[in-house]
Image 1 (tube, rainbow, N blue to C red):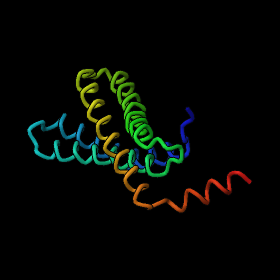
Image 2: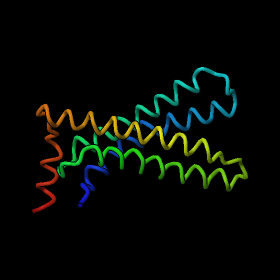
Image 3: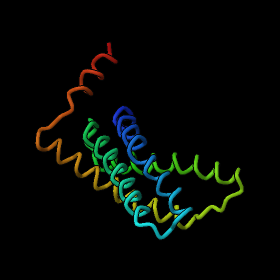
Image 4: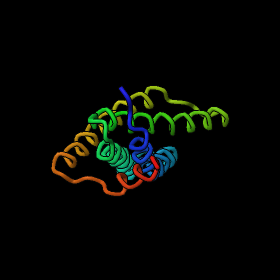
Length: 141
């Protein structure tokens, strides 16, 4: 089983741009005012970013495994970003909430499956990303 690394890279880029800033903002606000309704709004926006990134990975992939690519994109991007956050928090001596990380990871995996299903739906409807095809052809010359 070979994964489409280009598709995963595209999806991860989208997830990092859209999900991580909202995750950071949600965490920052929660540390200052946990009762703010904006904490949940920002957290949901971050989930939407992971779903979007997973959808891109699933849509762009050319291996016939959109759900797997969506799941790996969302989960991998979350774990990569969370590793940086945990290391930074540990170096500052902050409390690391492992249960919250595991809970959020499980929700992000669900978002990855949803994104994968949406990307698969786009492919089945005949919507194909044209820029990826030209990029792949240029890379093989």
